Amino acid sequence: MIRKFLILCCCAFVAAAASVSGNETARAGQSKLAKFEPPEGKVLVFVGQDNESVGGTDKWSDGYVDHFGVPAGITHYVYFTEGKENPFGGKFDIGSVDGLNSETRWAAGPMCLRCYLESEQLENTVIHLSISMEHDDESSVAAGDYDHNIEELVAFIREFDHLPFLIRIGYEFDGAWNSYEPEAFKIAWWRIVDSLRAEGLDNFATVLATYRLDIPDELWEDYWPGDDYVDWLGYSYWDGGTYSDNALDFARAKGMPIFIAESTPRGHQLDQSSQQIWEEWFRRYFRHIEENKDVIKGISYINADWDAQPMWKGRGWGNTRIQDNEYLASRWSETMARDLYVHDVAGTYDLIRFNPEAP
Image (cartoon, rainbow, N blue to C red; front, side, top):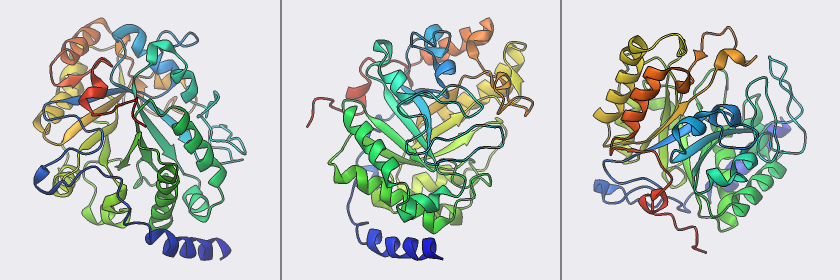
């Protein structure tokens, strides 16, 4: 009851601040690009989802980066939760943002954002930072219980103000595994974004992302923090099947770009299959992107051996490391060389209008 009262009070307070605009876009008639949105005909390529899968550092040197070069960006995950344990034995620290400043594991791959950013090889990337608030922690963030975590995040974004961040708060907000309560979710979102803005930080844009393409419009509206608080929309892409276009239609109606924030050929073993999986998943994936390139402006591929990680082993995710298959690696490299895909840090900041020297 106390927490509910705090949330309601916070809602009244933060709603008054909702008129503050962090979105670059006028978007009426698509007259301007969203913050960090590349121009028409360009799609930013990101890779995740853990340090081992990405590579590019002294400690982790057999990941995607070590075989295909540094893409436009890196996808990373952190948790706003404390003192809890997930069903796979992964434990969360108390007093810090798990996965931000030091290495941690949640029964999956190693997670350490600072470890990427201290690698010379990974300088000048775009960072896609995904924040989880599962375990009912959207309510804790909304109530102010995790303000120290927000302060740590703000300090980190300030320290690396020479890098642009796409921040996906409460990612896959409609997933049943998250069980986010809509009002608490929105208040948590406002609390995080307002704290970043209060420090005068301008090196971030926000991403509101679902886990599916066919999300009903009413769910978007239930969790919508407000046009002034959302820069990009997003969804996850797993199976390569036929989907409805609800998320795409909603993005077009809002005049906002889409980020395919998580994608991987779930259920396939790339070290065991080649041409068939290219036809079944990769060709469909790229066709989906290219048929909707008016609105899809970013993609993130998860390059992981899922079955080697306790959290995912035996759950049907497989091995999606592209470098483990010579045929797929060749086809992937050919695709990334197309003019549409921004798969290089060189020139990316100019493309998204980010000036690391700006005050």
